[in-house]
Structure formats: structure tokens, C-alpha cells
Image (cartoon, rainbow, N blue to C red):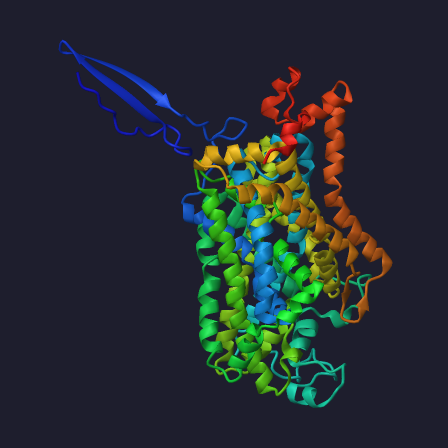
Length: 607
């Protein structure tokens, strides 16, 4: 008698772990008897409607998509400036601290949540239905951000087209859009006139935005055809990148996610060869540990962590929902979040090598040229590039990088909206192309307000209110819903089912205690330090601030409104309604038997 184990047999569904068939062969009197057993079958990789869910063509498609979304324009225009302003290398101390206790745990949490439940930002809350409103919160936030984020990409496209000239248009003050206040750096450095402006600054504000033709947000004017055309090109690119789902977007990111690294490396090589570059890099890395005694430094680090990793937009949930069930989301979280932070740090060398060069060339202090936001990439950096030999070529390279940084982040935001709503309203699955067209066209129409003469005022208002306090609130509710109501132990079981091992005690403590406390602190700080939006010397009227707050509240209100709705549609006493609302949909039969985990003390104490 002999006994053998047959080789592993592929499962019929390739999206989950392989099913293993054991065959015992018994040989007795020349006759073979066989028996087989299926060991550890996994649930079929389908969505809740029973249809097979689309998956990424290759694992690298997913990784590049996540990296491309998380690494965006803020990595170039915000982190280096914050590092320089807040003690140079000393800023890395609070930054890494908050990355370890909040950034990575929340990043890991969202990837695991989407991968296990295989739905978008709203559908995943079948694990705790009363919190489904937070899914609609993050979908709305992603939609609102799309209204103005696409405009930044259209600015970059406009600059790219303008760079195909022998002389860049932001070099001199003799253009039709220049004002009498325009002067070059040499004049500006010798005169303490606050009203003086550089050619690059006037090109952005007067040549591109035409803000001089508007006196405020109540006088916008018509959309400018040049920016409208660029915005239309961006929308077309987004549509054809998204219309077929992750099969197409996963291929686009091979270019958009890798291009910035190529360009940043080329710009760094060129930047370090410029006079003054080393001084700029030294200023970027100079360590001032006394800055760590300033509370604002820690607040800046915490804020940067919250917004740089991209948690709370529903994008990580949407992307990971297309993974294979057994994908190692823990490894993905560590890799992608680390690459994001390293990219921010690396881009600082590029930025400050050019800022150091510009500071020396015009004989001004580095403080005079160092800034963050749109002013860095659309004013200061073009100013520096314009002084280089072959400036048009360097300008083309730089703005191609901005385009690639922006496009894949915009793709992520749109995918969050599309996946989230399609998974919630199943009838849309058969009409993805039309629904994607509807979303991008709607975004385009709203974005037209941002390409008018006074569009910068609308842009500033949206940027200030769309994804500030509201996204911190959304991630806080998300963390509470998963770690406390669904249960960090149950969530850990889900992860073990996917990757074969439970998260360590460190991750579980962060999810249950540290990250929620951190987020609560950030929400309180965001309210306590709130300042009304402004642009230059322009102050927004009260009605504009009210519109901004309505925008922010409209997304945050989804949490209580859906909770009330969920409690109202369930019949019975309040305790019975609450039990159904906080129990996973797959366990509602246990509620009928009076078995509600959340009504036991053990559920709240276990880690």
C-alpha cells in the first residue's frame, strides 16, 4: 500500500488563494481507491451582486496607481518648504513620528478594508452599516477636490504649450499683460516696494489667470477659452484613462507614475551643477532642534502626514478593492507609504538646489524666494528655469513632470467616486463608460468657474474648504467605526484570512487608540486654528465664507444623516434598531438570536 499527495491543483477562481486537493491513493489487490478533500477553500472573488470583480492586470499596476495617487504636486510644493521653515532636518523628527503612529497604520487600514470587502468607499461599510455615511463623505470630498485639482493640471498644460518658444514669455516686463509695477529681480532687490512684482509672477496672475480683469469672487467674468481648452484636454485624458476601469488606468500609470522620478532626477543633476545650489541644499537640511519646542512645527508635521498619504479620499479603498484576495496588503502599505515620504524628501533637494541658485543669481536672501503652494511651481521655479541656457527645453521637462504628477492623482480621485457609486448602485456596472463620462463632464462644468477671470478666487475657496477639516473628520469616523464598532480583533481576523498572519500588537494599538486620538487632536486643531481664506490682499466676503462652510458641512453631514436614516428604516425598539445598525450585515441572523458582540464588555476591551 502506498500513499501520495497530488500536486496543488489551481482553483477555478484565480482571484483568491489556490484550493489544494489532497488525493489519497490506496492500492489493494491490484485495485486503486482514491478519495479527495478540499482544504481551506476561500470565498469566491466576486462582488456582493454575485458578479466576478475586475482585478488589476498585474500587481505592479496597483502599486504604481497607489504611488501615483499619493505622490502628487504637494510632495513638490509643500513638504520641502515645510522642512526648510521648521528646522530643516529637525522637522523629520515629528514627521517620522506621526508617520509611524498614524500615517502608516491608517494607510494599511484602508488598503486592508478595501481588499477584504472588495467594494468602494461606501459599500465596505456592510461591516458596520450605521457608518456608511462616512463612505459618502469621502466620495463627496473626492468629487469636490476634482472641481479644482483638474484646474491645476490645466495650468501646467498651458505653461507647457507656452514653453515651446525660443524665449519664454515670463522673462521680461514688455508684454501686453504686464503692469507698471513689473520689475526684474535686480530692481526688486534694491527697492523696498511691496507693490513690485516679477515678470514670472505677473505672467501667472495677469497673463494666465487674468485676475486683473476681476475685482473679486462676485465678479468672475466668462471662462477664458485658452484655459478652458486646456481643461478640456485634461478631462479627455482622464476619461480615456478611466472609462474601462483598472485595466486601462493600470497601464496609464506606467507613464504618469514613473515620469516624475525620471524628471526629478534629471532636474537634480542639472540643479546641483548651478552656482549657489549647495547653499540652498544646506539651508534645506540645516538642523535646528530648538524649532521642536514650537508647537506649530508639530502641527505642520501632523497636517502634512494627514494630507500627503491620501487617506480619507476613498482612493486607497477603491484601488485595493480590485486586488486579489490573497494579496499582501501589509507589504504594499509599507512600500508605498515609504516611497511617498522618500519622494517628498528627495524632491526637496531638487527644489532647493534651484532656489539656492536663484537666491545667489539675484543676490537676495533665500527667504525671499522660498515659498510653497502654486507660487513655487508656477512663479519661482519658472523664474529660475528661465535663466538657464536652453531654458525652453528645461521648462518643457519641468511642466511634463507637473502634468504626470497631477494626472494620476486626479485619476485616483475620480476612480474613488466612480467605484464608490457603482458599487453602491449596482445598475451602473453595465454602463461604466457612460457613468464615467457623466462624472468627468460634470466635473468639467463646475471647474469652468475656476478658469474665469476671477477663477483664482473660486479655486482658493474650494481649496480652503473642500478637503480640510472635513477629511480629517471623515478619517476619524472611519477609524472609530473599524477599530471600535466593527472591532480591531475582527478586523485582524479578516487580515489574517487574506495574508495568513494577524497584524502585530503595534498595529492593533495604533488602530484602536493612537490613531483615533491623533485624528481627534487634528480635528480640534483645525477648528481652533481656522483662518478665513484670502488671496494676496483680497479678503473674501462673508457670503463666500458661508458657501465654503456649507461645502465642508455638506460632506461631513453624510455621517449623522445616514446614521439617522439607518436607525429609522429598521423596525422595533431602539436597542434592536441599534443592534442591526452596528452589526455586520452577514451577522444579522445573530441579532435575531440576541447575540450582539457590540453589547458585550469584551468587545470593547479586546485588542
